[in-house]
Image (cartoon, rainbow, N blue to C red; front, side, top):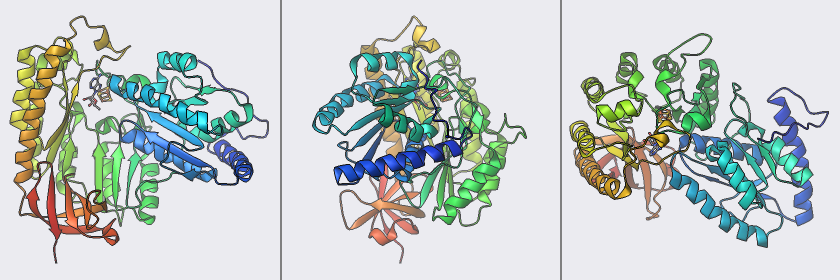
Length: 477
Ligand code: 5AD
Ligand code: SF4
């Protein structure tokens, strides 16, 4: 793949100094352009996919803002960046679909620069397709080099050609670059990057690379800074947080990191995402149980309830082990809300296998579950399996599962009506200007009468009514 290696002589070699240098250079160009156009230059980032991408987009917008761009939600902006996802094929199709629309906008605004980044760009076949059929794209980069946006955009502006910079992998973790947070009171915090699990259906290890943990000191320092800045809730992010710290020079555990983070004064709530069941330790369960700052929510992807399919998926646990783990967690932390991910139609899945999944769903009684139809990802072991399940069999199974999880989650939600819980108010209710929306410790949303002065506050609320997967409530006097 193309790699850009032409550096201006005066640019520092070391990061983050190099990017700071390019941010300044880019800023000069942005200033010149805005004088020329007689208005500020706008930048819009559209994020597809998971919390990791959302976090990356905040970093990318931080760089753009520092370079003088005005953040915008409009795709009609001077700089438009799609941060893409490729975990399932429909995510890719959505990007291709919207690119056509972007091209029509670019026809009307010749100053527009179009960029693509994120997981989808780590696939060679995608780059080929864009180079061939989407020539109007100006800049492409991947998941390992987002910190280089200023440098790449500078090059794009100075050379006026399509710039492509994709790295196969990296062992670098570049810290200390700006970020533009979406919320003032809560923030995601990367604790590790990549994944080493190679679940046989999953493309993530190929596009996000090998697992790399950040040093606990750097994480704690970042969170201290965020708290100083008004953040009360953090979400610790990693593909598999339970293996955090194992490969560090001074090995540590995720539970130990949680304890360190919990000590930060002024921080009220800690969440994390995602836990792989195979290495969820007793130490973690005890830490969650004993630390009130850690939210009463655990996302524990099941993927399938059939031990035979789990083996094919390379998940390294079976149905009984998963159920035993859930039992232990529920025993230790009875008010914990459990959520999960489930895939329907993995190659070779029979009606009996699917029934096993339904059985686990009924036994665990998840507070909510994300259900997915298996999507074949080129290059993964499952894509080469011969016994792919036809759509006409998968779709009815998916519908049955969805009905089951929705019924159960509605029942689970009902059980807390009448209770008082603390909600972190996140924003105005999108349907009713006299209401605000908050998140409970167990990750369920509640709508209460309120106004914008409530946003960012932790407020005790009484849960008055369940609406299936959220509540209507009121502030306590
Ligand atoms: N097909 C369907 N779902 C998938 N996921 C990951 N890869 C695939 C795939 N190929 C789901 C898993 C994972 C979630 C983030 O996406 O359930 O936990
Ligand atoms: Fe994909 Fe499995 Fe890694 Fe999750 S743990 S990102 S499903 S390979």
